[in-house]
Length: 547
Picture 1 (tube, rainbow, N blue to C red):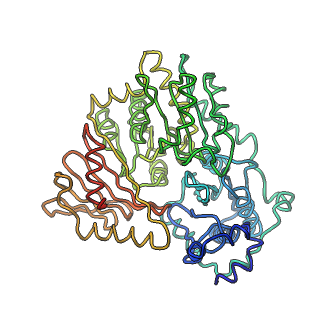
Picture 2: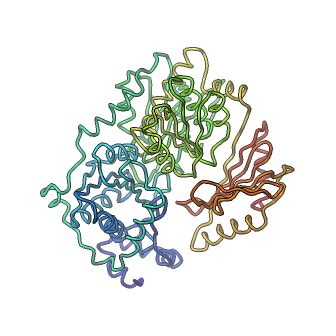
Picture 3: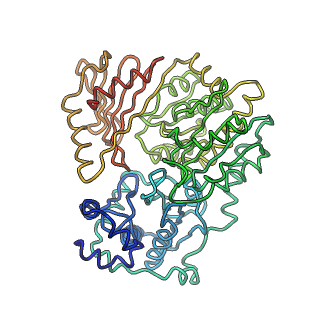
């Protein structure tokens, strides 16, 4: 449908006509240049008018596609949650109304909720599917839709492709019928997630954590305007840990994220206000979660300085602690292919099993499901370098809410022994080697952005370097071609789904190139056994991207 037809429907799109009129012609062209597509990570895009933006009509299209995908199922049920972003409540009700019109029962959350809670609700309600309205840690102008299977994990490739076909088959998006939301509630085809169900998630967390050791540990916590408040402080209260302070103006839900340049705990700048408060009160630990509370980051006070740990370092601390705590069964850890190999060294040295999967927590969820009935193995951690962790599988996605009190318990135990999380990390490096990581993200905006990223990947495949920064490439893994090739030319298959990732191995580490699945970015991962990782990583980045 052309631009004029869209502009004729602007009044019912949730988009303010004044906001649309203020856009530049280039921005308007981008909004109509393509169509938001449902991919492996759902849909994520800027809010606005047009097929390449998130609005009432694009949400209704996804909802109708969902309904069509459930046509063969008897008594289908979908659970819907939403975060604190702009239009998240409206998109939630829009989704519910279209599903109800098509005979699908719906459970919706009354208030904003976190992604891990939504995953839990899907499992506990024995639902057909789950939907989370969120754009995770993207900037304020974004929102998105994640879809979950009956196991509580995001849809893996085949069911996601099936759903995408159903969505793409819908052509006339301006005539999609929907039931009035309030009428749906009155008719009980739309119901609210109960307080008992919400409490059940909390009970699972507190039962898993058990006790937080008493200490004089002091922490600062920030939800970065997202969904982890009030649930995280209330859980800490229930667990008997009271020595926390909130970054009050960041613990107010606000889709503009007005107090931070980035609502992403991967970014050190996200901790600026937490650091100011921490320095004022002498806090030992700063913790922040992203807006939908699936990712978390920490900053540790060590020798009077605040140290921002990266996602790999947090993962290594969790992994080592979990393995040491329980050895009644063979521990199984699942990580992504772009996450540090230090985890493998620790796991295998302790008699555990490391499983590697493609980037995307849905693949971790898939592996958890596959080992559910294996009494000889115990899942102890799923993690990605991008600050996503899962400790206990009553959730099947990243879960910062269960991880926060676990980290507090770890830090409290260390504090009683005069040590910090940095001390614990240094002990791990001393025993297993100092494997360090740096991540670079290069952004290419606009309609030409994807073309630029595709060209970079294409050229890297055609002209794969044999040496980078005086390091010989001894193995190349191309996950799109599903082949690995050593320097002698010997090849073998990679037993993983196709993915647009290239990984080059050296004797002392590896690098990987991967376009983001949700943002106009290409990422360079550098993982080396090195004491000068920043300098060496910069040389590699400059060589590849011609800086």
